[in-house]
Length: 227
View 1 (cartoon, rainbow, N blue to C red):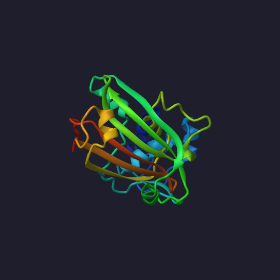
View 2: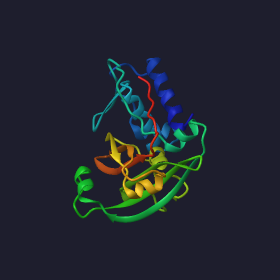
View 3: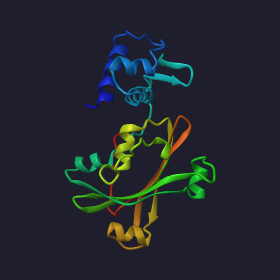
View 4: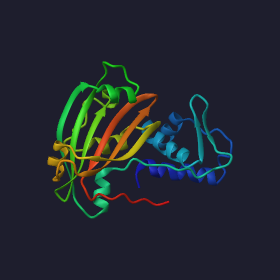
């Protein structure tokens, strides 16, 4: 169990034990981070998970309260690609194909609500499962979310680093089908025009754009979820 999951379970225990009553305002994120001896990002992840589950109500500048009437809500957790591959009993690999600070394309800048002259890191990564091509990740990443020095994305995928280090406040996700371009077909070992399952995702934190990513999966990829 990760640090934020351990904290989430303790916060949930306090709510169930009525240490924090329904409707009560709980200590702030910073105070809780100090209490548990963790970074605010870790505490934010635990609080956000409980808010997504309908146990807590979080409002900017108004604090966090225990929900009066907890409700189960639909949610979508951003998966870590490496863990998905390993859960299928395969070995995950990655190849960083491209990394450069570039002007964000106009259509993506518009969708991310960015100024026209904004520059993001453009990263392209090929993910592998047992050395076979699985998915091409084409990502635009805000330089403002990266520490100094920045992570080595040839060793840890941008996807995994973001999930573990950058909390998100809101986002959007689209599932579509698309025909493989020549470049995608060459990387995924298929033919140009082949049908690909594509996921496009955008996320924001503190009202600032974090990333836009397009994930194009090799033919035969299946999505499985539980209701």
